[in-house]
Structure formats: C-alpha cells, structure tokens
Image (cartoon, rainbow, N blue to C red; front, top):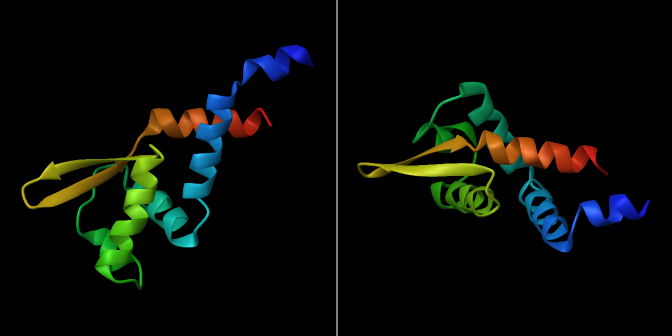
Length: 98
C-alpha cells in the first residue's frame, strides 16, 4: 500500500483535481467530446455547437486550456482548439489508478 501512496505525489493529485474540475461542467464535456470527434483543430464552430454566448464558450475553453486538456493555436484572427491527447491519456491513467 505504501508503494501506491508514494506513486502519486501531491503534484499529481493537484493536477488530477484541476483536470476533474475543468471537466465538471456539461458544456466543457461537450466541447471536449466534439474536439475528440473531429480530431482536428477547430475555430468558430464551437460557438455554434452550444446554446451559449461566445464569451461564455471562451470562458469554458479557457478552463479546459488551463487544465491542459486542450491546446489553442492562433490562426489569423481566430484561435483553433484541439485536444492534447497526451494530457488526456495521462488523465485517463490517473483516473484508472484510483
């Protein structure tokens, strides 16, 4: 049991908690699922996906980006978003280790 406790340090716990918090809203889950389904960077269509104001969608994207679950790349006047698959895989492994 000690080995398991030492396997995940507090930084891992903080990171895992932050990612769980970022996924704690249905709109953010929907955004992440959509990005995974498209499997490419997406700009404007995320606002069309949700019945929310553009500023609200931007806040949800910010939460996902700060948690490291998505990446945003500037393309001209727009930002294109895609899932960081490495971070998502780390998250899945952390959840499975519970």
